[in-house]
Length: 96
Image (tube, rainbow, N blue to C red; front, top):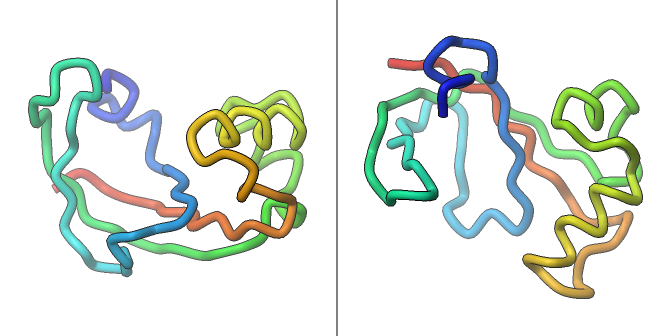
């Protein structure tokens, strides 16, 4: 949360996007620990790519040491349907 409010974090990832997020959508930012809102943002840009196509720099910027670490982390949430071919929605946002 602090990194977002200070402008150091401006990107997030989504797998299996059930909200069909698109550029220019407005977002309410929610603290996952408290469930409370801490701000609003707008999606500035977005792209999709398979996990296997993420660059080492993208993985590092999202705090994953490796592609395997990213896969294991997301399998905890989504189970075995996560694979190297799973699409990641890379969302770049700006506070509004």
